[in-house]
Image: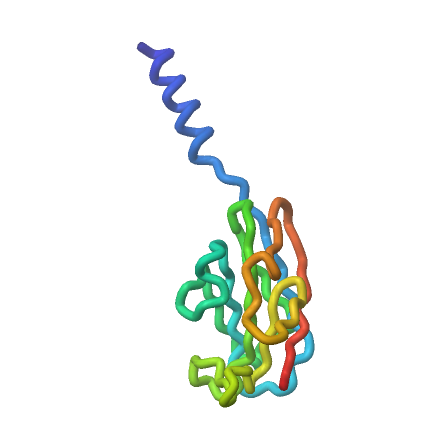
Length: 140
């Protein structure tokens, strides 16, 4: 009986262990210290880059932002990152008549969209160790 309990604990322990890693995101090109920087982390193709469908969402006051944000203890996997500078702090990435953002924005792998939003695969990073990425904000 004792061996069965030990075997159950060993199996349970293996299944409950998940490798986690840190993702350091450097954001360059912020044009003003007004508003907030919003970082959206996505882990599913179907949700990227839709608002309110992020895996995790982070807000940092632009005037307190050091330029690097570290997300700790992320499970190993595929992710995409979308960042925007919410200059007027209204919680919306304001766009013009054609749907082009008026506020600064950027994506992992520094993907620069042309005529449509990027896909998850365009911006996908494989997190299988601690990692650092840099995102250059685009202002139009």
